[in-house]
Length: 197
Image (cartoon, rainbow, N blue to C red; front, side):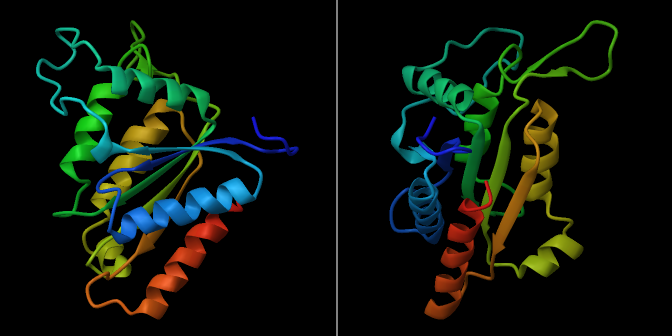
């Protein structure tokens, strides 16, 4: 853990491209601010690790984890705060992030089936999370009209399902034609979020 009282172990997951996108800038700004606040920070860029994003047989056959996925699971176990930076595409999360979650959030690691019970045990409790989300849709429209499916998937049916709570979201959009001032303000909000861990 970090050297300061209350310091946490923070894993920042850049869940699409790690270079040249605003999402990567959000992840970097958050990671730097968390480090400056005394937290111990690791950064994982999904586009820089090697793995098959397809869970070919569901849970019927054990699909051996690649070394990078084993390391990712170790980092999740190590962390007590997770950050996911990702864009909304076609209303949902990018395929790379979906495939990553399907491969690592496995029974015995993220949750455990319980005989005679409708819901499994949550194995990743004791962790919190922040979502840094970019989109071209105005966030209010995405929330009220589309019902924010990517955010609900990440927050409710993935992270909270596995015991990770609370989950707080920063929604940045519309990115299309956004000004430098607006982007600077979003980066400041990401940095401020890192101060609330």
